Length: 298
Length: 298
Image (cartoon, rainbow over all chains, first blue to last red; front, side, top):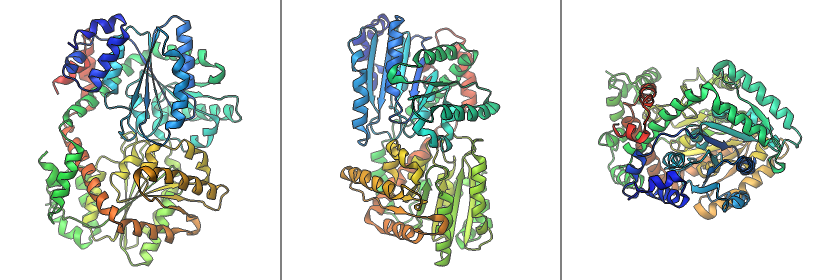
């Protein structure tokens, strides 16, 4: 039944795609067969991450507009943290995307992180692979950069764009080491604000020292996404990155990362944290509780 | 052989402790027996996290001084990222700790993250449990807040202290949602700088809205760690937190988190990422490579 969705998805039927995503998201019987039937796909994924307020949605919006003008079909996954703290700002961002919901060349799906602290979404790998089976020319995954999500997006996207703003100038000092390692390119957005050029220079300087180690040229692009400035340069940089020889190398690395996470998810599937907690509660009533003896039986 | 170390560790022999840590760190045969023989321990762990430059080491240093004055024995684990980007600043921080290396009441061990992107240390759980077998009155784990490490420290420490500085004022807006959830208390360090009071107020305000959801009172303490100001208030807050009824509840949660991670580590032990990558490289030479069929055999 779910297998019959595949040819429809491949033909560009977005209702079939939406249904396929729901089947995978909720692990409805047949979801594994559907995943194992997916053909290999050359469609590449653009990941956009960065702190809240940096303008990720506006940049995604600009990229979508440009892609639609070029006649491309675009699939977008928006991953929203389900944390209750910043719903307001997120809803504001999402409104901007609204204009695309009725465009036949654009498919948008929002996914909540479902409380996995700092993670993207438990089925993000599988859902992005479903999107790759549909006839999209470009796929964009946009996420709020909290906790572990930057690292996860880098393990998923062929091209990872990290968006920063002049106000994050001080943060560059304290910028998480991981970010420098995962970014395929940086965008300095809101580049009309003071400090933008200095931030771009600092980034280039730091990236040069990174490159000594990793030999990886990382572009830094200035944009004013709200005025649509710099977006075509960004798309050029993405195209150049995806056509580079390193891109094939990265593809293998990505597949290995994805395989590792899929195996991990499956092997841990039988462990219910709630149940684990209640079993530990019982076991600790015993005075000589030892965690290593406790886990030995799993 | 490694089992014979345990009584020595329990007597406070730091050479035996150092040897035990090395045995566990390098998985030398007998390490599992050692871990399974550990008695249950009431010693609580204080975790200190926050961005580089916030003054975590200075705060740890102040807490150690105060604890030593009170006649307490203190064990400290310092987790340093092995990323090449910020070694300089870290070495500066570590020098400050140097004065304690020859104090008989203080044991300091540095651990490198060994390249696990954003993670703490692959054996941090086990090593901290070894420390709990030694006769320390207090255990402190200090870590640089990069990537996943804040979430990991929260899954390890009975009391998690998040250190921020007035300069991170703007960051509070963009502060990772996860941080608000994991902090048992905030320290606004360098509180003599402009903006400290405003930052503390903003934090208290945000924490109040968090408390509506989580009903968890989170103290915000101002310190000038370099001048030793506010450190005794911080220690008071730690003691109050560790004596609270929530502390017992949290202990069970922590044990469940730790059990989950230990099971995960063991179940994934046979998967070598390098090998996985080379197998995927071979498999993708085949045109109809499908990731889900590939992982089905694991």
